[in-house]
Length: 275
Image 1 (cartoon, one colour):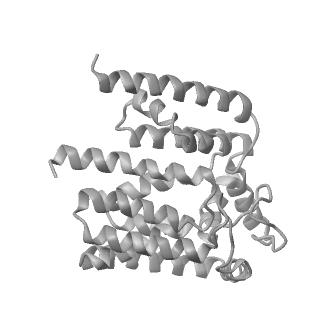
Image 2 (tube, one colour):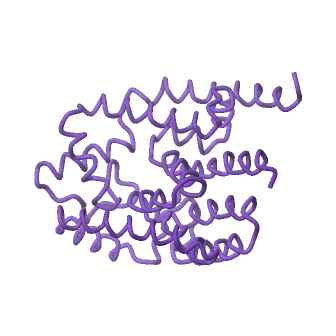
């Protein structure tokens, strides 16, 4: 057994232990994913999508763009909450497996990265965002628009495309984003008004992160990282783009750092391509 494989086995053992502890202690009750199911239910019932009295730590508070709730509405209509939570967990596991190069052992090894283990504790959307970032960078730029429809921050990748002069890819991503926004606005204009009010109320000084730094400062840092990423060759610039997106996330709790696993397949692809 090579040293690399031995290290993977050790990390996988640690990761599997953390995942088992998480599954036993947390997966029997709803967590962050329940906010998406509830948002779909609110739309179906014609209730307000956002709670203006909620804080960033209010259980099951919905902070995402209305389009997420609109996609969730038909899902919430047919799936009970327990089944939705179970399927969401399966989706997260599939995302991690895909990021790990479809290798179960390496996927378990990634669980040894504490933010990934914490992500499975809270079951948020960050591993899905990681997959969308890899797909956007390596397959089709339209995936950036899909990611931005979930958590806004992946939209910063449009600046990366512009700085590198990739105008056709930029046009496709912007076109898809505008199309998604237009459809969403037509379906729920009042929900977008609520979303704008909530975002304006939080403002640029909001500190929804695991360190006390205003959001505007994180955005400035993200732009600086983006500028550096655009000047480097892709094998280094692409991973830095992932870092910029993470810095720009509206809420940057510890679990959000699990998005950084998107760097793994990017580095692996660069190595296999010999660049």
